[in-house]
Length: 149
Image (cartoon, rainbow, N blue to C red; front, top):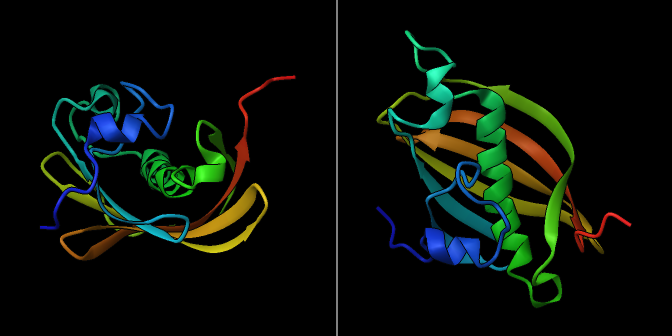
């Protein structure tokens, strides 16, 4: 296992997500604005298992994409020019779901930025369990001040 670069408290200093929607537990590698590796420990009491599905708990694919996006947000919002800003989805492309993720799994999340122009960029994202690919996609993000005006 990799060393922890950031714990949950440190992650919350960078991205605005809070429980129950902070969906990453730690950052294990970070090259600011370039790539990030993060981890999510999938626990039996994670909120989504109450309804997805009570007798067959499986992590929803859309939440795994969100986990990847949150890791990517840490990577980008760690850049000095984006400090205090918010990252929003601009798009999700080429999403593929390859294995079920269940309680007890450790989901390793990796996002590498492949394009950025100003506040808009795209990351190539992959989530794995024990080296086995669970989800892959490209996520496009937009960095904003958070003003609704």
